[in-house]
Image 1 (cartoon, helix red, strand yellow):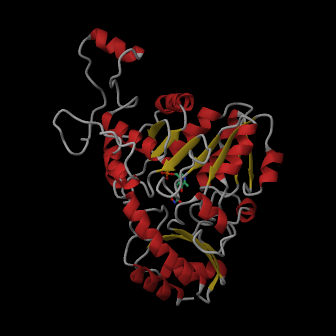
Image 2 (image 1 turned 180 degrees about the horizontal axis):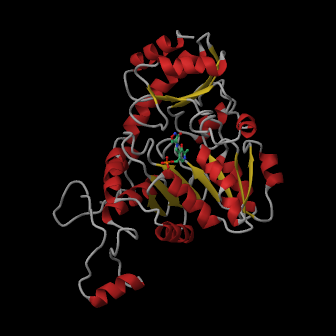
Image 3 (image 1 turned 90 degrees about the vertical axis):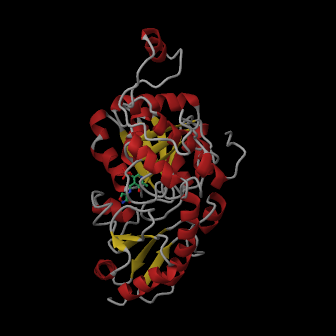
Length: 393
Ligand code: LCS
């Protein structure tokens, strides 16, 4: 069915449709590495591109394609490229856009490994980088070099919940012919559509809100146009960053309830953020739904809702943070985010521990920062759990 005119929740359920000959309601798991050709000429035509057809699962597979089609539709993009993990998606974009002598400009607070590989691995291949506060547009303009080939954003940023104005940065980048990629993991297309705001590429760790059930690691890139799509798809296929059909099946299943899950989690997150902001042990809270967020106006403009990710700093710093993390009973002390269960973690010693301390502090990832991913449990239970954990301080 043509899903173009449907509402977002209907698209979540119906988009991407790959029909199979049995008429199954759900696209089956095509757990096969390879596909039979009808005859030698058919095989040759599939390889030459004269005829569309599946060849080999690293190149394409119906279960994976359904998820790629669905995500491309949800992000209003040209085409989706599913990857084995979020980091495979990040590397596909880096490899597709950068090369020896190229320069990347990015936000200083990013998911740790997205920055760490650029500082430790990519310099071996002659890539230069600049990390800065991308909410300072003049500084962004000054820091663009003649060899800048990619502006890479993550908004809200992991773990500071700092925001970047996608439309403003895209306008600056496009004046200079530079593509913009946005990691949309914290929002999902339910809350933010970077391609509509001017970005050229959007990527996800689908391990998080998209799958939503903490049982799969997966990634996705959606390219805004055909040329970018083909360039990135070639990288993914040849690097072997592809997804597995079983992974695709699980993520497609999780995607159907994305809107319901995010809606409920963010309603609870607002209450959790207000509770934390009013607590005497808490120094400050960063949540896009709070007026105290320095970019509250941008959040209202750019995001359909504030999401379910909260960071906060305790007055007692790291020692107090440890007591809270060791004290939670309902929330899980675990990295990752965006699942049905509430998770709590300490970025400086966990997700961002590989970022050298001076840069980490400069990016706002202080020793006392604690990050919560609010789940879909009863909010009263989440609040009671945090209340008793905070009482340990
Ligand atoms: N981008 C963002 C914004 C992320 O938060 C993560 C993982 C990735 C990319 C990488 O995705 P993966 O390969 O893990 O699917 N973020 C994690 C986090 O904050 N805790 O554990 C993983």
